[in-house]
Image (cartoon, rainbow, N blue to C red):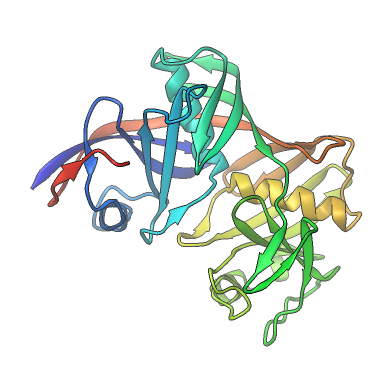
Length: 294
């Protein structure tokens, strides 16, 4: 058995085990490691595992890889990125404005407030522009695409569901009342629907005003999570497209774990702002060899 040092951090309750790849090796089979340690009954428990790694791009100060609780690798995670940003700044590897790297993209980052003693911070990241939608072999140059899912009935649906890509896939349902949605039944059905060969993240949204919405998230590879940063961004992109939210003002997205702020400018650049917090540090045992991840 090998002991692996970790830092557990969360953004609005969306929690991950972070491994410091700057100063130590990381598990060789990171997918198996993520499945093992994310188990909330038999191990530490988390929504997944994050590798904090030295950058590849010369302008970045750090590179992040994220693995969901089922071992699949994610291409974007706004909550984990804010936590990584806090760690980079509080560990002295970055100032208050810098670039991070994930899945080949550079992410402009601003530390709005930082409490080193409490291991907390408020962080804004530039998520970028919505990507052209791709569903199976079909693609759409627009950032949103209407979705009709055979066999799926969502109570109180206000407009046709919209599929959005923030670099990772999201399917957004605007409903009259979140309490009327059979969340745990529909979440996994939609995630694994035949319309999405690579699965999808699922957001159910109750709009409270032109700048406010409540959201429940079923995250691809992790199930229900208390918050999802990229999901909050997708909700605002879809809400603006459906003319339910105002593009010219920040939107407060209420999730079970807390509130996130999403801004979208006239060039469709999306910015995410919210808290990051460290929970604890420790070690976990796992039987694997190790090497630096490429």
